[in-house]
Amino acid sequence: MFSVTFDRSAVGEAMGHVELPSCGLIEGFLEAICEHLAQRLLAVREVRCCAQGFEACAFVVAAEKRAPLVEKAITDGAETVEAVVEVLRAAV
Image 1 (tube, rainbow, N blue to C red):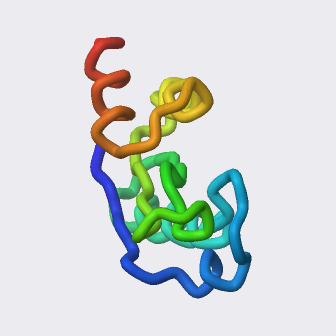
Image 2 (spheres, rainbow, N blue to C red; image 1 turned 180 degrees about the vertical axis):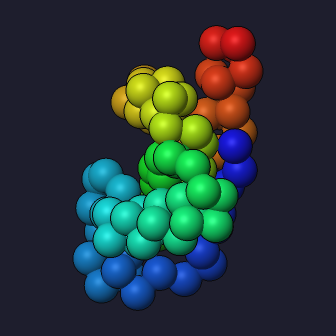
Image 3 (tube, rainbow, N blue to C red; image 1 turned 180 degrees about the horizontal axis):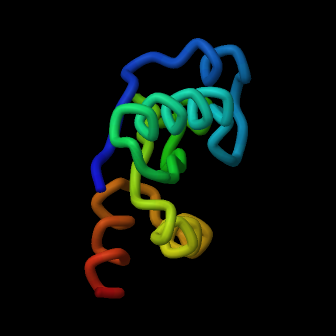
């Protein structure tokens, strides 16, 4: 698992202020690139977004089989990559 951070996101900046992460287009783009490079199924999920008022957009990249844990961590309120990592480590 690793993370990707964008200091600026044209998608996020264009959205204005929203409650939920809004860079789904970038999620899909990153997932396609990472899967191609890794030659395996991966899941990319945005943890925080500049459209939510954060300074940057942060994405978690994990094995596809761990996607439900990543989703649960975010749904349960994890707002940082570190918080998502803690949930994944606790599940091992």
